[in-house]
Structures are given as structure tokens and as C-alpha cells.
Image 1 (cartoon, rainbow, N blue to C red):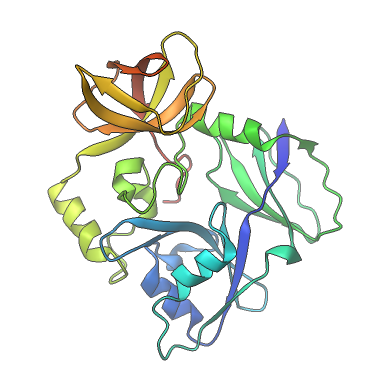
Image 2 (cartoon, rainbow, N blue to C red):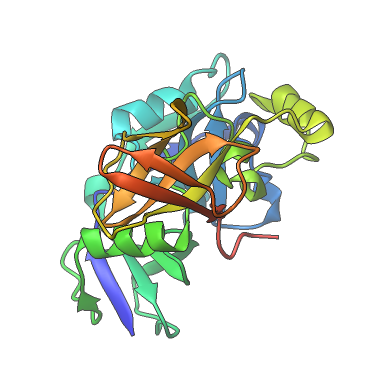
Length: 272
């Protein structure tokens, strides 16, 4: 069954003769791989500033879809290094009805509606761009249901689970990092992590041992020492950034009781 939830996904339109070259040189994705690439935008220290899908418009412009980055913030990140480039970015979010489609089954094509493969749930999911007045045939679901599915499946989200203090590799987002495309912001740090493997933390699924609800921001402790923090949560399930050397099955303490560490978070159905 396919379900649809409306969202406030940011849509920024990037135009100009230098747009393709500029975007390729700024984000961590190799945009030559095809349309709809998931792209991370990093700072010079390799930390995550934003996540977008990069989609080509019919007229040759680019649409950047960001689930959680506000328009002004995304435009600031994307255009921070525009100097003499012929590049312009504008918020066009209100031009579209936006949402996420997820679940089982293959959605039928609908005239005027764009479905862009995404990583918003444990199974197949799509960012939806539709004309504002378009009637959509799918069953409506809440955003909380989508988030619960994502967290239960261990799918990381930017910036809730991986933000300006984290490397992509710490949070299961390595499939969205290109090590072969050439220079981009943060590329030297990405190459160093690839060659040296110098990580100390990892994002893991967690679950309360007694079924009590977890909360984002809760510190996890073991033997009286803080070993990590819950980054996102839905009921008794969550994702927590913890020390890399802690094995699966480790039971730690939180304010509400025991929490057991599970498998690492990972991006499903990553592009090859």
C-alpha cells in the first residue's frame, strides 16, 4: 500500500550558464551519474550543512529539493561561493504541492506530477512535486507515521541525525559521498576519512528495554560515563550517535531506563 504525506520540502531553482559546473564543484555528489542525485553540502571541515536531491527541470535549470533546510538557509549554503559564476538561485517552493510517497507498490505515472526516488522511509519512497491544485490518488498519512517508519528502519535524516557537527560517514551517509569526482568543498576531509578511517562515533538504532518512549537529546550513559545521545526518536525506537567501539546489544542507561544499541543507521536503496 502506498501512502502520501504532505510536507514543507524546500524547492530552490538554480539557473545560469555556469549552474551545472558550479553545482558539481560544490556538493559531495557526482551529478554526472544521472538525474535526481542525493547531494550533501559540506563545509570545509567536511561537516554536513544540508541534504538535497538535484533534479533537472525541463528547461535545463536545476531544482534542489531539501526536506528540512529552510529556503533562505539553503540558498545561502548553495550560493556561498558564487563569485564570477553565472548562477542564480530562487525559492520556488510555493509553485508546487509537495509531499512524500512511500510504502509497497509501484506508483502509476500522473501527468504533471514528478516522483523523485528518495530515502525517507525503510522501503521505497519518493519526493512528490505536483501542481498546487492537482488531485492525488494515494491514501493520506501523517508526517509522524513517515518519521516512525524512517526511525524504525534506521534511516538517517539531515539535520536531525547528521548536521553541522557530524561527518557523513558517522551517520550512514557515505553512499552520498563521491571519492572520485574531483574537488568540492570538504573533499580533502572525505579523502582522509576514506584512507585513514579515523571515526570515533557512529549512528545506531536504539530501543528502550521496557517499551517506554525515547526523546531526542537524551544522553546515554554506561558505567557512569556519557557514551552518546539520542538524535531522533519515535516511541520506544530511536537513532543515537554513540562511540564507534560499542558492540550491538550493548545496554546503556537513559533518564527513562535501559536502552539497547542496535545496528548502524544506513541509507536504503542508495544510488550506485
